[in-house]
Length: 90
Ligand SMILES: [Zn+2]
Ligand SMILES: [Zn+2]
Image 1 (cartoon, rainbow, N blue to C red):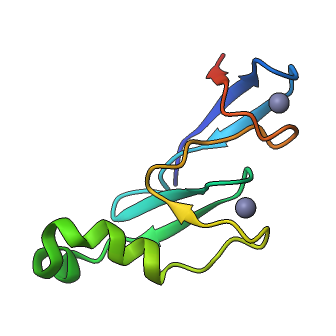
Image 2 (image 1 turned 135 degrees about the horizontal axis):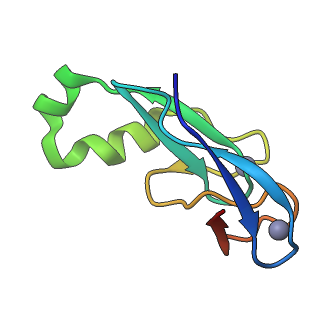
């Protein structure tokens, strides 16, 4: 499952494939400092309980990226080569 989209970096010209949300019931979080992403199972029960605090809770509980950065809902997908966020679908 999951969609992959051919993507090009406007900074270094690297062509790569961006994968979006792994499927129904999963959220994709991107690292705030490199091109890594992680998939988090959407926790319906916790979402109902925490409401607007759900997102910060997920960001707190998800593993740190191996680069030392954090996976967040706000982080944008990045170029795997130069880590630019100036990328677009082709
Ligand atoms: Zn790049
Ligand atoms: Zn990272």
